[in-house]
Length: 303
Image (cartoon, rainbow, N blue to C red; front, side, top):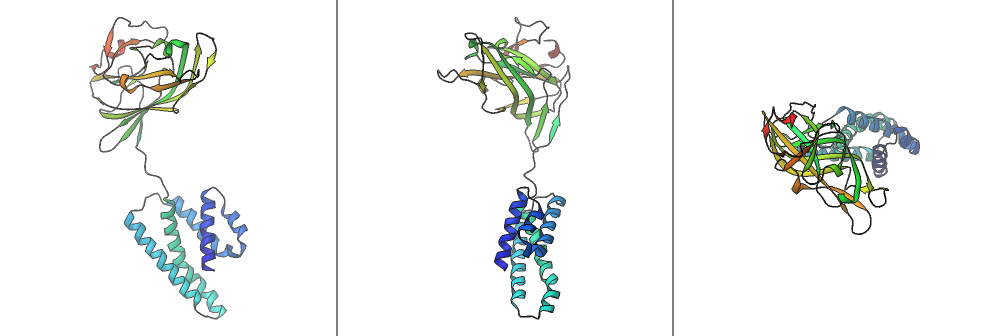
């Protein structure tokens, strides 16, 4: 009976973890429903109430208590006792077992994944200390009349003792990469972000589409993933404008006619020369090469 009940408990835990209800488990095992219902209910309540990750020492301690409680319950059941005494002693037998099982379930489920770095949402500011630009390294871009890239979000990882994520949504969400070949770069966001050393930049792309010169047809352009990543450290300091160019390139996969868009880490960062291309309706600075790394904060917005 003990082995059978243990297997049923494990099965019910797996099923509930996949989204089934306690009632389904009780219906499938009616002969054990009286013992199962309080244990499974306590497991769910405990999972909801607790929000901590047990230490290794705590796991070992409660595992020992759990095993000891199981041994104690088995010894009690094996004793020959009158039916009335067995019934009256049932709750006393299962009370420590239930407590140990609940603790074990807390450890088993883990309750919460490893904590994610805290997130700060950055707001745009024309006089901010950080500008984010997009450019295109020339590869197969000459095949396209236009290549539109829609960017939904940018995430910067701030390193240090406590890693943080800085997120912002571009003010210019769609760019035509055919206008941004070579060292031409378009600013899509500017605002204030915390000072410090950053180590990762993620670009979340919601859509990319291109039209070829030869066929004048729209072709599919594949992405390594919806979130493009560059690992390249850079620093941001207060009172100075930091320009970060995120360089992309489109390449043809052999002679298959299929195209892939991917980041170019060597042409990205805060150490690149670039020519700023303004948004539609604004004049371009075609004759004014600029440097990404540092510039006076007050002068960046007009360039």
